[in-house]
Length: 549
Image (cartoon, rainbow, N blue to C red; front, side, top):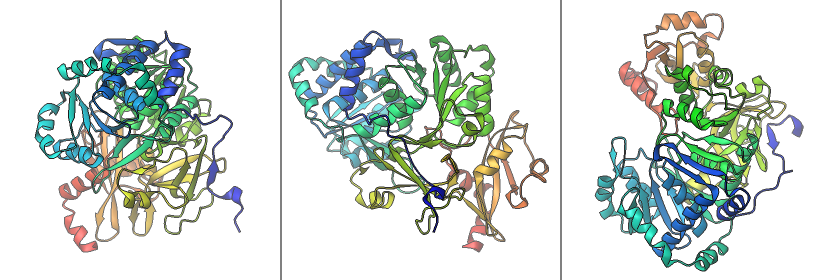
């Protein structure tokens, strides 16, 4: 029988207690301790608020929403890029027990209608527009089919002014009574996960879920009230609103917002001007900053730490962040929306190999294991299998979707992530791919991440994604989608020569395509299924699917 110590199972430390507060109570405690320190800086809106000023404005919005008839358990959608009003809505809804529904800024009419309808939103706070999207006209188009949607408040218009003017109708006592009626296990947030098939699922998260996850993520970065956290990632996703906002406010740190959406130059300028100590991003964001022609002209000496997450981190990119961006204490975090989001994270004082080659160890008050996807048995350390996690961070479930909740969370409370991972002898986890992304070529299991990491070392390759495409002989063949440093084409022959004698022959890409950009979600996750579908069409491989079906 296998000894427990050799199994891929690990439990996080419990020496630091779980926070048993609501988000509102926790913010009040931070305000009491750090009232005059800067809480929020929004560069593109020329906003600079102390914690006391932030709290006063949150109170105003909370009272206004109560005056407008929003009750505990009602849902309000938020559809906007990163603005100060987003932050106010986040904390105000939490203080009055209203469930905030995060809506992807990239959504179009069909998608926003689905999210508002499925969650039963009573209200919507929205920007007027973003990039090519006119939110006003889009809301007008879908509103007749949304009978539950009673109020729409557009940021930056008379709608917002009118909302704030209603605050006086709610007394301090009424707000205090509402806050006292809340518990930290109440649902407070719904986030729609962007799946590759089917409708998005509304992950339902509590105060306890996201407040603690934000706290422990920031604690792993060694935050204090002296830290200034640059947040170019979108608020609508856990990376922005939990790891960014709640991570900051649980420690009295400053939230610094460079732009409505990610812009490499605005981010670099903000880090320099605001002397940020921490910077967040997905790998593609760091790649864009490092590649920007102005990179060398920005003083990044204030940076100390940060988080790279959202998708697997290329080792070469991580090394460049440490060496060229002064992020000696940068951490990598791994998680998913359904787990609030982080389950593992590297430490600020880990040696370089740990911080570039793993996603760290299990988080406090969290339990993880790696299991055989077929049998569910925990695998021995070093073997690959499905990563599972449980603890305070696991969502309550998918909103109004018991069937898909049961498919994701088993009877013992384990969240099955769909990610393939390995765990080493010391409990460090490495994510090797998605179960659905794994390529099976001629009976050999091929993990795209391994090939991607190898190809990143090629001197001309700036970014690369590896996917499987259909093949009549082998079942699947390997395609490398490449962005080069100079934008010039790179041949299959060059790739094969680079791989020769260094990786197994069955891992060498048969096809190479040059791409100018990768299809991705707004959180920076590469949509590999789209790369595969496009390649099948461009390479004329549709007949291969028929032959191997």
